[in-house]
Image (tube, rainbow, N blue to C red; front, side, top):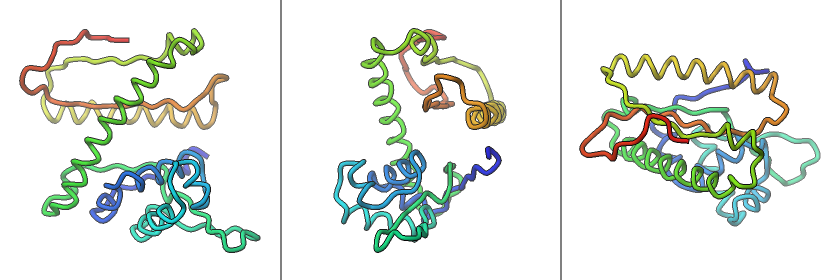
Length: 200
């Protein structure tokens, strides 16, 4: 089952399509909860069915969602994510200013989303089990590396993440839940506030 996970390296049209908040949320929701109709997606995301249907069609045009045939569904259209995961790098879009602008928007969105997740966790922390209170953490490390070394580090981290993704699918722990894991390797620019090596 774990070997069936699919990944897409986003093309220019695909990343341009994703640089819109509702479309990004639609793909995320379909990946998280599985196939759904425009009506159920609208209810889950707090929007209207017309907007949801329109943006699903836009995503379908670039191959990020596909319509799923369901016997007996009548006029209801069911949609599913075409892939389990996405990846992109700026170098993919050299010479495509619109796609480059979409990359910048998505990167900024990821930063805001991480901050929101961290704040939500901090608010929920008192009600969490002792095990999860001790498990979840935010750490930062300062390393003196070259660009090739940094790339190699990230590829090794991706291999470890993939191993644990497969483990979570095949043998989830008794208190398994979705865990958001963010990985960032950012060269230090300017006067950034010094932080401790391990902040939990």
